[in-house]
Image (cartoon, rainbow, N blue to C red; front, top):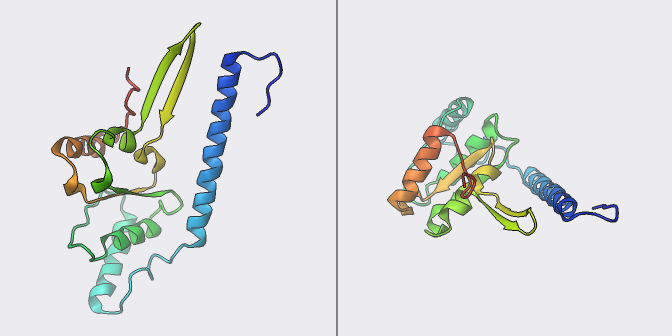
Length: 178
């Protein structure tokens, strides 16, 4: 962060914004390196050598080649998350983020900000604007894979918001249209 004195508040805000973005990229890079270092081969992540497991691996490989939305259902503990991670590892998105969202832990009041993000802009005198931006899970997963765990725990309104996103592929942070 370098500023030449004297500097304006706008220059300071712009410089801090750039520094913040750079810091976010450094953190994301570190996280991706950690993820890659502990990467498990997608085909071997599924344990077992039965005909059913072989069939599952083959199906996952075929589905991973398609660019489609997928709903994985099953009882608790049956390996839905493992299957989702395997799909991600087998797909063209494997170098992009894998973001797991525990829907049961999302609060009603913070749902939109946590999932879609938020932007708040405050006018400060004279003629300066301060903005605060929260990056949502969907933006963090940009071009990667998103796992919505326990969607049934969301309210109907929250489920409708997710459905709208899936259908339109548009994600607007709260406050972006204001």
